[in-house]
Length: 88
Image 1 (cartoon, rainbow, N blue to C red):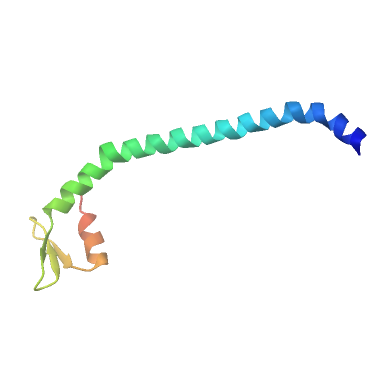
Image 2: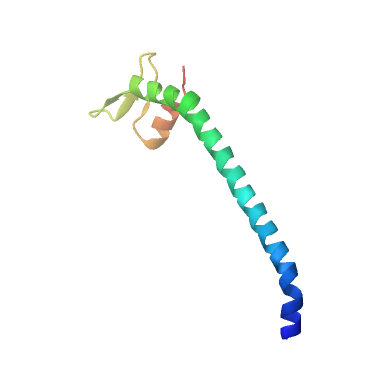
């Protein structure tokens, strides 16, 4: 058993750092890809959605969402999603 461990030690000394570098490299690449996507969302998508959200008006009495273009939808989650889909 000690002969096996002593013969595998040089192999593990080379393989372990290579595997660690590969895993670390993949983690860094994934983080960079995610950061790029988040930057794109923050720059292009979210400002449009915030602008659209600020255009909506809600009537508590009727439980209806309205916008300035005359569209309306139920005040439920599905109606809200429908109204948010109209990104002008």
